[in-house]
Length: 113
Image 1 (spheres, helix red, strand yellow):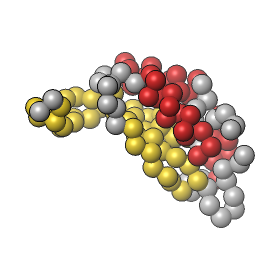
Image 2: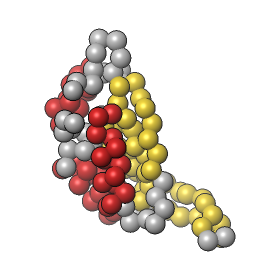
Image 3: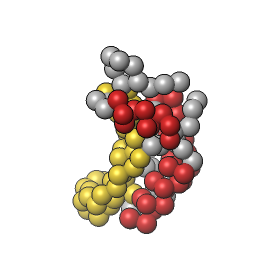
Image 4: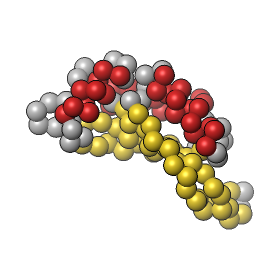
């Protein structure tokens, strides 16, 4: 199923965080190798949150994972299996892609449904 049309190009963005660069890299690479995402970007962040009634401040790594609508559920399930956190933040955004060439490339590198 193609994700691009002359009018609208749709894709999904999965946002999540990891405790360290090693986990972020390994899991992002695994999702690319399994053809569940086309691309992943990771970067260091500072996070503030409550955990077990205590305010936490941590260095984490965020990941922006780009995929097709047709496999996003499978990608999210696999991410949950691989994720080291007990309660990972896994947030999915719908996005309109403005590059037809990128959409065609994504269709080639991400598995079909």
